[in-house]
Length: 120
Image 1 (cartoon, rainbow, N blue to C red):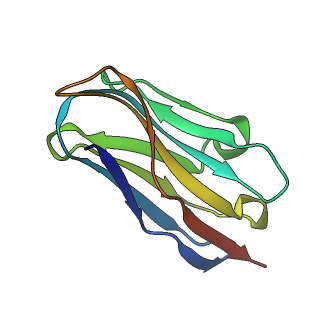
Image 2: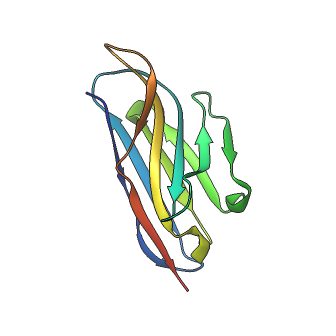
């Protein structure tokens, strides 16, 4: 069984920083792209940042220059370093990964979500 476990959310003042982590565990054969999404109540889930297995990254315009996504292949972990946080960054952040399990087909897996709250 494959699962993604997130950590690192919390409450921070505007201008502050947080680092999110997401570790994949279980019977994993390979991991392709990994990414972070966020969702506010009543809004659609938004792709914030993604990283390919080769290390290519992409970001939504609103976080460019402030957020950095990275991954540690040996640990099956993806990180999201968030700097100069704004109140508009408040949301539940979800980790996503395209994983091929040892027995089964490649599909997208989701973490349970971690709350990030930025106060003014």
